[in-house]
Length: 322
Image (cartoon, rainbow, N blue to C red; front, side, top):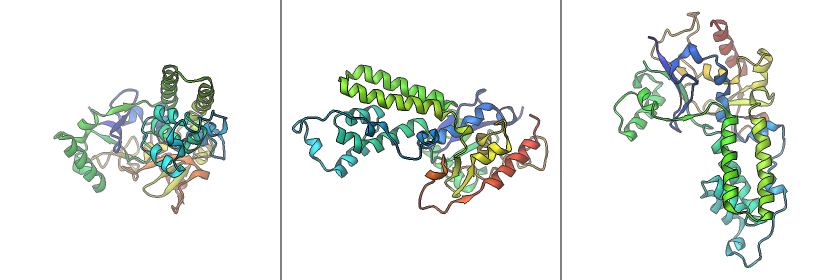
């Protein structure tokens, strides 16, 4: 019958929802849906709108000032307020606290952005693998096999990791869809919160900003400034190079990512040309994020791995009927 594959966020214990569910690798490898895989790793999608600065509308629009005696919270040092925001885990709660006072909105904006990133790019920094149902748990790369063993032990699961992963939550393959889910939730929250006129104006400004981001975030594939970062190897791939190579936008940076994270126990697994084995992905189980050149993580000696990564993608593209 052939081997069936799943794309899994190992840390978040989530599945990438392939349109056909579980499927043979060749059946979905070059699909357009895979082109959106990297959407799950986009850091601060506002960067993809072409902005060079860390602009955030909740800091730019005037908000009402609470009376000096309204809350002792406002008398705390900014460092303490920032610590309080770190304990907030809900986008809605963060917005509510930001709306209390202009000072709180300025302190809380970074945390609000973190929470939105977590909602919109939930796989950022997580380990990624696309693996088949023939894979024995001990057949993964050693570091990944240890992680898999820990996950199974924590879940009290005795079957294969493939079967365990089948129970994981599915992530939609459309970032635009995730944006709309978040925006709809915020709209519902605003209606139920009974915001004052001043608060509603600030909230609407934030919502307008996020709506604009939603329209632009889905354009990550065609944004020349995008880079795919392998946080494990400290290498990056320039999206502009992929676009230059494949001017029609297919295959894409998302396909390049998938081409590097596939794994199977079948050491001879290939599509058409036996010289190119797709299931010994050199980045299997590595951590990733998608950002821009100007926002690469500091303190890391980054290496441009574009040429080698693009060569692998091109070899697989030429070796496949598509």
